[in-house]
Length: 227
Image (cartoon, rainbow, N blue to C red; front, side, top):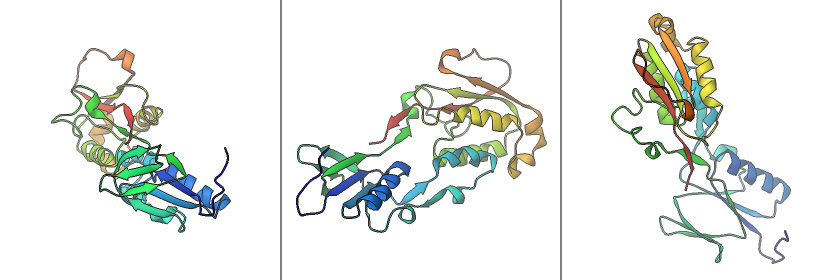
Protein backbone atom coordinates (compact mmCIF):
# COMPACT_ATOMS: atom_id res chain seq x y z
CA UNK A 1 0.00 0.00 0.00
CA UNK A 2 1.53 3.31 -1.08
CA UNK A 3 1.46 6.30 1.25
CA UNK A 4 0.34 9.79 0.25
CA UNK A 5 3.09 12.08 -1.01
CA UNK A 6 1.31 15.40 -0.47
CA UNK A 7 2.87 18.04 1.76
CA UNK A 8 -0.08 18.04 4.19
CA UNK A 9 0.05 15.54 7.07
CA UNK A 10 -1.59 12.20 6.44
CA UNK A 11 -4.81 11.95 8.43
CA UNK A 12 -5.76 8.66 10.04
CA UNK A 13 -9.35 8.56 11.30
CA UNK A 14 -10.26 5.82 13.79
CA UNK A 15 -13.89 5.04 14.53
CA UNK A 16 -14.05 3.66 18.05
CA UNK A 17 -11.93 4.48 21.08
CA UNK A 18 -11.98 1.14 22.83
CA UNK A 19 -9.00 -1.16 23.28
CA UNK A 20 -8.40 -1.67 19.54
CA UNK A 21 -8.80 1.98 18.58
CA UNK A 22 -6.60 3.14 21.44
CA UNK A 23 -3.81 0.70 20.57
CA UNK A 24 -3.89 1.67 16.89
CA UNK A 25 -3.73 5.39 17.69
CA UNK A 26 -0.81 4.98 20.08
CA UNK A 27 1.19 2.67 17.82
CA UNK A 28 0.67 4.82 14.73
CA UNK A 29 1.87 7.91 16.58
CA UNK A 30 4.94 6.01 17.81
CA UNK A 31 5.96 4.83 14.34
CA UNK A 32 4.53 7.68 12.23
CA UNK A 33 4.71 10.78 14.44
CA UNK A 34 4.09 13.13 11.50
CA UNK A 35 0.63 11.70 10.89
CA UNK A 36 -2.48 13.34 12.27
CA UNK A 37 -4.59 10.85 14.23
CA UNK A 38 -8.22 11.39 15.19
CA UNK A 39 -10.41 9.04 17.22
CA UNK A 40 -14.20 9.29 17.15
CA UNK A 41 -16.29 7.79 19.93
CA UNK A 42 -19.67 8.51 21.50
CA UNK A 43 -18.30 9.41 24.96
CA UNK A 44 -15.20 9.59 27.15
CA UNK A 45 -15.94 6.36 29.04
CA UNK A 46 -13.40 3.54 28.77
CA UNK A 47 -14.46 0.28 30.40
CA UNK A 48 -12.17 -2.68 30.92
CA UNK A 49 -14.82 -5.00 29.54
CA UNK A 50 -13.32 -8.33 30.70
CA UNK A 51 -13.83 -6.98 34.21
CA UNK A 52 -17.62 -7.09 33.80
CA UNK A 53 -17.50 -10.83 34.51
CA UNK A 54 -16.07 -10.28 37.99
CA UNK A 55 -18.42 -7.53 39.17
CA UNK A 56 -21.25 -9.96 40.09
CA UNK A 57 -18.84 -11.78 42.43
CA UNK A 58 -17.39 -8.66 44.02
CA UNK A 59 -13.96 -9.36 42.56
CA UNK A 60 -14.02 -6.04 40.70
CA UNK A 61 -15.84 -2.85 41.60
CA UNK A 62 -17.43 -0.62 38.95
CA UNK A 63 -14.91 2.10 39.81
CA UNK A 64 -12.01 -0.22 39.05
CA UNK A 65 -13.07 -0.98 35.49
CA UNK A 66 -14.44 2.42 34.39
CA UNK A 67 -11.97 5.17 33.50
CA UNK A 68 -11.69 8.11 31.12
CA UNK A 69 -10.53 7.40 27.56
CA UNK A 70 -8.23 10.40 27.42
CA UNK A 71 -5.74 8.98 29.94
CA UNK A 72 -4.95 6.01 27.68
CA UNK A 73 -4.71 7.83 24.34
CA UNK A 74 -1.58 9.65 23.22
CA UNK A 75 -1.87 13.33 24.00
CA UNK A 76 -1.13 14.25 20.39
CA UNK A 77 -4.18 12.37 19.08
CA UNK A 78 -7.41 14.24 18.54
CA UNK A 79 -10.44 12.87 20.39
CA UNK A 80 -13.85 13.69 18.95
CA UNK A 81 -17.07 12.76 20.77
CA UNK A 82 -20.15 12.09 18.68
CA UNK A 83 -22.41 9.44 17.14
CA UNK A 84 -21.41 8.18 13.69
CA UNK A 85 -24.06 8.57 10.99
CA UNK A 86 -22.42 7.27 7.80
CA UNK A 87 -19.16 6.72 5.96
CA UNK A 88 -18.64 7.97 2.41
CA UNK A 89 -15.68 6.03 0.99
CA UNK A 90 -15.77 7.87 -2.32
CA UNK A 91 -15.38 11.28 -0.69
CA UNK A 92 -13.30 9.86 2.18
CA UNK A 93 -15.49 11.48 4.78
CA UNK A 94 -17.39 10.41 7.90
CA UNK A 95 -20.59 12.20 8.81
CA UNK A 96 -21.63 12.49 12.45
CA UNK A 97 -25.22 12.60 13.66
CA UNK A 98 -24.83 16.21 14.84
CA UNK A 99 -23.92 17.37 11.31
CA UNK A 100 -20.14 17.49 11.59
CA UNK A 101 -18.08 15.92 8.82
CA UNK A 102 -14.57 14.53 9.19
CA UNK A 103 -12.27 13.78 6.29
CA UNK A 104 -9.52 11.18 6.23
CA UNK A 105 -6.72 9.66 4.19
CA UNK A 106 -7.00 6.31 5.94
CA UNK A 107 -9.92 4.96 7.93
CA UNK A 108 -9.93 2.30 10.65
CA UNK A 109 -13.27 0.96 11.88
CA UNK A 110 -12.82 -0.28 15.44
CA UNK A 111 -16.34 0.13 16.78
CA UNK A 112 -16.49 -3.37 18.27
CA UNK A 113 -19.70 -5.20 19.06
CA UNK A 114 -22.57 -4.79 21.48
CA UNK A 115 -25.09 -7.27 22.92
CA UNK A 116 -28.43 -7.40 21.11
CA UNK A 117 -30.99 -9.04 23.42
CA UNK A 118 -33.74 -7.67 21.18
CA UNK A 119 -32.67 -10.24 18.57
CA UNK A 120 -33.88 -13.11 20.79
CA UNK A 121 -37.67 -13.29 21.21
CA UNK A 122 -38.70 -13.10 24.85
CA UNK A 123 -35.36 -12.01 26.23
CA UNK A 124 -36.26 -8.36 26.70
CA UNK A 125 -39.19 -7.82 29.03
CA UNK A 126 -40.12 -7.20 32.64
CA UNK A 127 -37.56 -9.74 33.90
CA UNK A 128 -34.62 -8.38 31.90
CA UNK A 129 -31.75 -7.59 34.29
CA UNK A 130 -33.75 -9.30 37.04
CA UNK A 131 -34.35 -13.05 36.71
CA UNK A 132 -32.89 -12.90 33.18
CA UNK A 133 -29.41 -11.48 33.49
CA UNK A 134 -26.21 -10.84 31.57
CA UNK A 135 -22.68 -9.68 32.32
CA UNK A 136 -21.67 -8.32 28.92
CA UNK A 137 -22.52 -4.69 29.77
CA UNK A 138 -21.66 -2.37 32.63
CA UNK A 139 -25.31 -2.00 33.63
CA UNK A 140 -25.98 -5.74 33.30
CA UNK A 141 -23.03 -6.73 35.47
CA UNK A 142 -24.11 -4.38 38.25
CA UNK A 143 -27.71 -5.57 38.05
CA UNK A 144 -26.56 -9.20 38.24
CA UNK A 145 -24.43 -8.41 41.29
CA UNK A 146 -27.44 -6.88 43.00
CA UNK A 147 -29.72 -9.81 42.11
CA UNK A 148 -27.22 -12.43 43.25
CA UNK A 149 -26.80 -10.67 46.59
CA UNK A 150 -30.47 -11.26 47.42
CA UNK A 151 -31.00 -14.63 45.73
CA UNK A 152 -31.92 -17.42 48.16
CA UNK A 153 -30.80 -20.23 45.88
CA UNK A 154 -32.37 -22.55 43.36
CA UNK A 155 -31.46 -23.47 39.81
CA UNK A 156 -29.39 -21.13 37.67
CA UNK A 157 -29.03 -21.73 33.93
CA UNK A 158 -26.09 -20.29 32.00
CA UNK A 159 -27.28 -20.27 28.41
CA UNK A 160 -25.41 -19.27 25.25
CA UNK A 161 -28.26 -18.00 23.12
CA UNK A 162 -26.47 -17.84 19.78
CA UNK A 163 -23.00 -17.80 18.27
CA UNK A 164 -20.96 -15.82 17.62
CA UNK A 165 -20.84 -14.02 20.92
CA UNK A 166 -18.24 -11.71 22.37
CA UNK A 167 -15.78 -13.53 24.69
CA UNK A 168 -17.23 -17.00 24.04
CA UNK A 169 -15.34 -18.50 27.00
CA UNK A 170 -17.02 -16.10 29.47
CA UNK A 171 -20.11 -18.29 30.14
CA UNK A 172 -17.80 -21.11 31.23
CA UNK A 173 -15.76 -18.73 33.35
CA UNK A 174 -18.93 -17.51 35.04
CA UNK A 175 -20.06 -21.07 35.73
CA UNK A 176 -16.71 -22.07 37.20
CA UNK A 177 -16.51 -18.96 39.37
CA UNK A 178 -20.01 -19.50 40.68
CA UNK A 179 -19.50 -23.20 41.30
CA UNK A 180 -16.19 -22.58 43.03
CA UNK A 181 -17.95 -20.63 45.73
CA UNK A 182 -19.14 -17.10 46.03
CA UNK A 183 -16.14 -14.89 46.81
CA UNK A 184 -18.00 -11.60 47.13
CA UNK A 185 -18.83 -10.09 50.50
CA UNK A 186 -22.47 -9.73 49.53
CA UNK A 187 -22.88 -13.41 48.64
CA UNK A 188 -20.67 -14.70 51.45
CA UNK A 189 -23.10 -13.18 53.91
CA UNK A 190 -25.85 -15.46 52.56
CA UNK A 191 -24.74 -19.07 53.20
CA UNK A 192 -28.13 -20.36 52.08
CA UNK A 193 -27.30 -19.16 48.56
CA UNK A 194 -24.10 -21.19 48.38
CA UNK A 195 -25.62 -24.32 49.88
CA UNK A 196 -28.69 -24.41 47.64
CA UNK A 197 -27.38 -23.45 44.21
CA UNK A 198 -27.54 -25.72 41.18
CA UNK A 199 -25.84 -24.82 37.90
CA UNK A 200 -26.77 -25.79 34.38
CA UNK A 201 -24.77 -24.75 31.31
CA UNK A 202 -26.37 -25.19 27.90
CA UNK A 203 -25.38 -24.43 24.33
CA UNK A 204 -27.94 -23.30 21.71
CA UNK A 205 -28.37 -26.85 20.40
CA UNK A 206 -28.98 -28.41 23.81
CA UNK A 207 -31.65 -26.24 25.42
CA UNK A 208 -33.40 -28.62 27.84
CA UNK A 209 -37.02 -28.91 28.79
CA UNK A 210 -37.88 -27.25 32.09
CA UNK A 211 -37.02 -29.39 35.09
CA UNK A 212 -37.80 -29.11 38.78
CA UNK A 213 -36.87 -25.91 40.52
CA UNK A 214 -37.06 -22.33 39.34
CA UNK A 215 -34.54 -21.72 36.56
CA UNK A 216 -32.75 -18.39 36.50
CA UNK A 217 -31.00 -18.00 33.16
CA UNK A 218 -27.85 -16.00 32.70
CA UNK A 219 -28.24 -15.33 29.00
CA UNK A 220 -25.48 -14.30 26.65
CA UNK A 221 -27.14 -12.51 23.77
CA UNK A 222 -25.68 -12.60 20.26
CA UNK A 223 -23.26 -9.79 19.50
CA UNK A 224 -23.74 -7.38 16.64
CA UNK A 225 -21.30 -4.80 15.26
CA UNK A 226 -21.70 -1.43 16.91
CA UNK A 227 -22.61 1.23 14.41
